Image 1 (cartoon, rainbow, N blue to C red):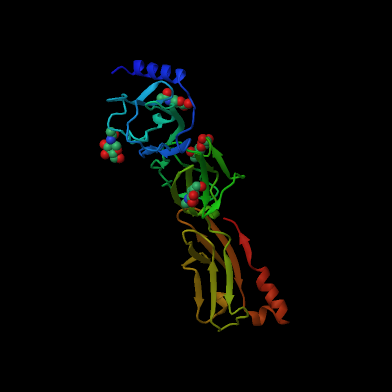
Image 2 (image 1 turned 135 degrees about the vertical axis):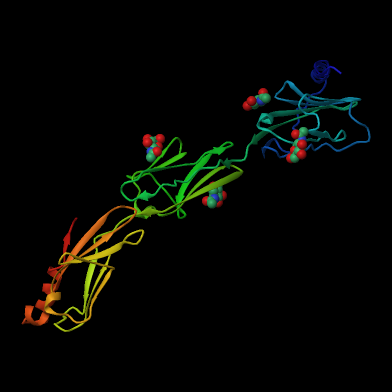
Length: 324
Ligand SMILES: *[C@@H]1O[C@H](CO)[C@@H](O)[C@H](O)[C@H]1NC(C)=O
Ligand SMILES: *[C@@H]1O[C@H](CO)[C@@H](O)[C@H](O)[C@H]1NC(C)=O
Ligand SMILES: *[C@@H]1O[C@H](CO)[C@@H](O)[C@H](O)[C@H]1NC(C)=O
Ligand SMILES: *[C@@H]1O[C@H](CO)[C@@H](O)[C@H](O)[C@H]1NC(C)=O
């Protein structure tokens, strides 16, 4: 059967008859995800007698289905539709974005006014994040710059980046490119260690991708302490060196050109030859950085023959920073 012929016949019937133009469809605007189905439901009460003719068209020109004594299914709609001939309701399955447009129903009953209705359908593809590689190289504070990308298929309406659940805004180290597709961090900072999430979404779907970043840093300037502070000859004394660092720093003490490894240096019985300048050097195997601080170990019974406060003062001022 010739659709064009049928349609023009229907149009003639329509223009000659009483065209009420009633929106007989129950919903006039529908959104669906690709792959889903849509049902265009009419408010037509089924009667015992079938209609003279019924036609569903797409975007004004394309025949979806035209039903008289037989059904003519438009090209591309085979196996995708189910038509209820008594009400005119239509089910359209396996939707793709190409199905986006206007659907029109025209019903010509026997001896009654024509019934018509239109509905707009929007088919959106669910957003889906494409596999994205997280940086695998070592990220070093202040040195490495990194780009995180967030590619997605489907119609992406929003793209939001968060770090440990908090939205990220562009700032002096963070910048967004290509409509938020790329988050550029230049350079990375220890504060960036954590979970970065990219959330892409449209009206009815979202998808997320995450990257866990670990930023290596340090060592920071070491902290030195002596226990006990006011050690005298023949006392036990421990020097302790610590420094913030990721990964943990390695420590070496240098005293009189001798190296002693470890963060704690223990002297069981302090003798005069133990006195002098101890340098603690912290190194970080990944950042390649090192930092040193020295401490002068002295006999508090001879070096300070006065008040306690003077002694504390001497110890504090003898701790200095030595950059290597
Ligand atoms: C429609 O989708 C279903 C599953 O979603 C699939 O099995 C079927 O083959 C599809 N039919 C057509 C005509 O594409
Ligand atoms: C149908 O019409 C809509 C707008 O009314 C348009 O966006 C869409 O591309 C058209 N589809 C086809 C297949 O012509
Ligand atoms: C990150 O992306 C920006 C903008 O596209 C580019 O200028 C920069 O060179 C990239 N940086 C790295 C480390 O790839
Ligand atoms: C992603 O965005 C959508 C839409 O705004 C929201 O509903 C969802 O909770 C977000 N998901 C995550 C993990 O942030």
